[in-house]
Length: 381
Image 1: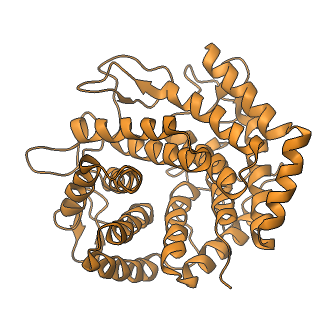
Image 2 (image 1 turned 45 degrees about the horizontal axis):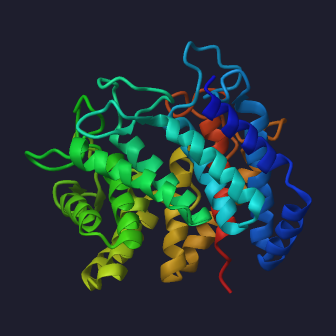
């Protein structure tokens, strides 16, 4: 166990479970300013985070295991395993920016920096397991995008440019190592097996959100480059949505949500009205394609709903909020087990092995993240 991970874990425990009296007073004041639905979702998210800490935290290693009672040689959560917990903490602190919530984000984000692999070439990036340092470590470019987006949420929650810089590291690694300079597109991982829709989605949105903060030519150039490929080679004309990969064009919801939101945001930042119109058409197509009550798997559906909620915040489409709220209602009533852990699908069924192993932190945290993001956005008037 490293000292940094141990300190982060202890600080997180104190911040989430043992707020000081002053912080508790502040929390009550902040909660009073939220609508009743937001207060309800905030309470659910806080409970979900606290249960994750109690059940998946590994005191010997000072971080979180990927699964309950994990006996693997390397049991700690990978980036993909734990990113929804990182996003949950960020959203809670955005919804209710108390000192306790902000400390929790800061402590977790400090631990999240342990995934930075300075040995990667040509520039450092984030490898899947905490403590990876070897130059040849297999590394995923969608992971770097999702991790960068979680650091962006931490920046939004705390205002600390440290987390903005961490997100920027992810984008620089993707731009240098992930983009195929010969024919375009973003590889799935450093082995270059195929061009990845999830990598394209997370990385495009990361570049867009970084540009929103930095207004730098580099960030805008990456967003434009990624979107130009997405809207041509990365688009499935027969489906009217973005392709899952260069090997399988079938659209997947957690690819579409981030790319639609990135396009809508970039349109508003640059004044390119054609991008707003395209985002609206893609939104309508996605709603038709994926339906209203989702049953793919929580780790995918939660990402889709996170960014459709963000889209609701800028375009005012109440259907998007209602969809997220109705899926959350399903999850609250059906996805929990007897211990209050969200380990089932949102319709109450056991998840297929292809989507989730038993007892995964990712499954519980993904559902928790949906509650957390619903706490951020007020319902329609």
